[in-house]
Image (cartoon, rainbow, N blue to C red; front, side, top):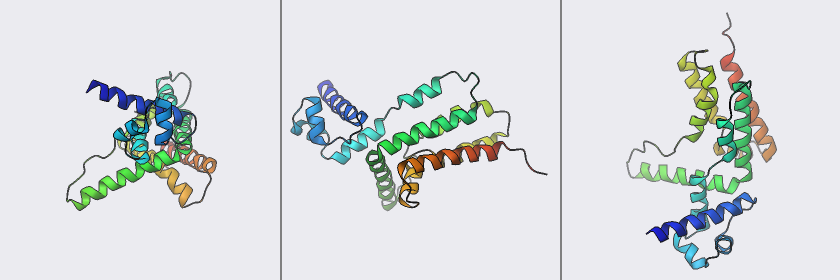
Length: 199
């Protein structure tokens, strides 16, 4: 059992190394990178899609982790938020096939549950919501909790693969334009929420 876990981890690590070089890993590439046979890799991941899905679920974003761990010092929630949106959405842009594969999986899972008459309580880990809440924590107490919570929810709409896909497919933007729009939208939402109410 331990050997199987080590083999699977080595396959995922090899795929991650390929992804980090800016390529979308194939089964053949992963086998070469991991110094394994294709048969071994296929045993754990029968399709490229299953491998990409594994990567999307286990993705760890060092840049986001660094941003959240960095002392706030004199930086404002506005600046940190825009950096978060820029960093993560550029990651989405650089790994579009991976992110679209994950989106399809989540939709297929929801539809399968719906057809089976099962209520799916939680499909996603919700990491972006935790990231946004951490960035906006200094604003707590400066606005009603209900307004801060609503802002956090609204910002989830501009951070991640779903917003990027809409801007690419519906609005026909290139990757840089899509990232620019999401960053602008995040700033606009925060600005609107923080603005004093008009008389």
